Length: 522
Image (cartoon, rainbow, N blue to C red; front, side, top):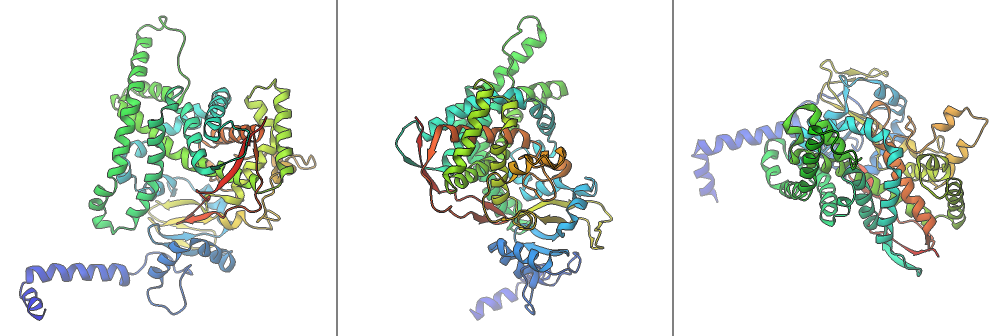
C-alpha cells in the first residue's frame, strides 16, 4: 500500500487535480459562506457542526416534522428551510403570504423555480416547450371558456371509464382506488386533450401515466446529484423519459397528421367543409400553431410534446385529489353519502337528467366535499415557491433581505391544519364549506369564495394570485363529475378508519395501494 501511495505522490499530474478537487468539495460543502440571510435553521440542532448540511438531510427524511417545527416555534418569523435536493429556501411567515402573491414576476418568478424544480432541461426532451409555454394561454383562455361546452364529453367519458374500471357487478368487490382512478383521470382528461376515440387508446394512456410518474422521481434524483456531473448522470437517468416521449409521439402522430391535413384543406376551401371541426386541446393547439406562422409550432413532435406535458400536469394532481375524496367518503358516515347523493340526484332532476355547467354549479355539497378533502389532504405542504430574480434581491415587510437567486416559500400544510382557521381541522367535515356558503347573513362575495376552485391566503391547494393553477376550473368540473357519477351509481362498504397519507419529500400523497369495496347500485 505504501508503495502505491509513494508512486502516486511522485506523479504530480495525478496528485494535483485530486487535491484541487478535494479542496473544492470541502470548501463548497463545508466552508463556503452562505449568501442567505442569518435566520433560524429548521432541522438544525444546537451546537452541532455543519448545521445547514445536516438539516438538509433531516428535513428530506422527515419533512412533516420540519413544517411543524417551523409553525410551532417560528410562526411569526422567517426561517431557513434547507432540503437536500430542493435547496435552502427562505420560508416566510404566513402573515407575508399576500406580500409574496403581490410581487411581480420580475421580482419573484414562479416559472424559473419550476424549471429548476423539475430539471426541465434534462427531463423534457424538448425543453423549449416549457421555456416558451404558449399552451398556457390556451389553458387560461380557451379551455376555461369552453368548460361548460365540454361537460357532456367529460360526463360521457367519466361514465364509460369509471364503469370499465370499477365494473357493473352488484356484489361488493375490492379495488385499488388510486390505480383505477389514474386510468379514469387519464382517459377523461385526454377526451378533452385529443378527443374520442384516441383518448381510449390504451398505449397512449399508459405512456401518459408512465411519463407523469417518471418526471418527478427523476427530477428529484437529479437534484441530489452534484451539479458539475449532473449533465452526465442526466444523460443516462432520463433515457426512460425520452423513450416514453418518442413512443407517445409515434402513437399520436397519425391523429396529428390527419388533423393538420384537414386544417390545411379547410383553409384552402373554407366553404368545402362546414362540419366536423373538433373542439379539443389538440385542435386549439393546431390553430394556434398555424396562426403563429412558425413551422416548428405545428411539427407533430411539438404538438405531441405539448399534449404530453399536459398529461403530466393533469394526471398526478387530479388522481391524488379524487383518490383522497373517495377514501374520505368511504371512511366517513353513510349519512354523508346519502345526503350528497340526494343533492346530486335532486339537481339532476331539475335539469332533466342532463349534465351541464349550471347543474354542477348548484351542487354545493359536492363542491364542498372536494374542497374539504383538498384542504385536509393537500399535496401542497409549502406554497407559492418563487425564485428571487431581481438583481437587487428582495426585502420582506419584516425586514429580511433575501439575495437574488434564492427561493422563497410560505406555509401551506400548517395553515390548512389550523383549528383557528378551520375549526376541527383534523376532521373530515364534508359540508364545512357548503354550510358556510348557505349562510345568507354573510355577503355573497365571501360565500362564493368558499368554492372548490377559489384560492385564498388560507387555501393554497391551487396556489394563489395571478400564478394560481390555470387549469383549476376545468379540473374542478372534471373531479365533480367523476365523484358525482361514483356516488350516484356505486355503494361503498364503509370502513372504520382511513389509511394514512404518505410524505414523499416535500409533498403529501394518498396511500396509493389503499383498497375499498364497492358495488354497482341497482
